Length: 221
Image 1 (cartoon, rainbow, N blue to C red):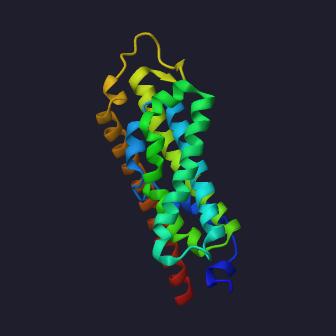
Image 2: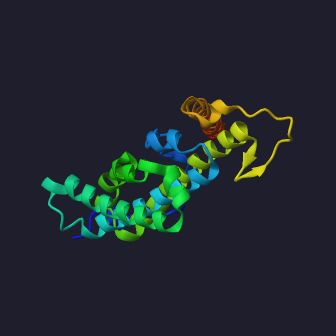
């Protein structure tokens, strides 16, 4: 029998939730280890974002397909086995495609298996929704995670080396801020993006509140 959530339609909000309203990094603060560790360049950030999105899409899709067959008592263990399977796949793919990126990302490829964003999506969404809706939602969450990594990677690479994707942006007089390529730089940049994101969301909420107040005032008149 189809659950109630299976009957709800797929909307644009199903995809956009992960990009903005429930962004896994800027709103939910999930997956902080790779966010801080591998975002010292745009290339590393993009590779980690795509690898995580691949695992998220495949594992949540598999959980959605098998949700009626997995006993509740062993569901978490089953989800971890499914996630670990696709992490192994993406580990071999990156190793085969680019040994340089594989060495740059290091153990954080294998650590995708403990990314709480993926396990959380499997438990909170994929286990309760049909395949098509799960894939749209997971694609939005993966895009939001990749977007956040690129935001950090671009700032850190630009200030830390004066380059973007290996291309020189600033002149020879620019003195690179080496700290931006180190873990403390990751904390500084993440803090800056969190402040900016929170400020934008607060302005958006204030405008919506003002709009509702104006509509209520016009109805009273």
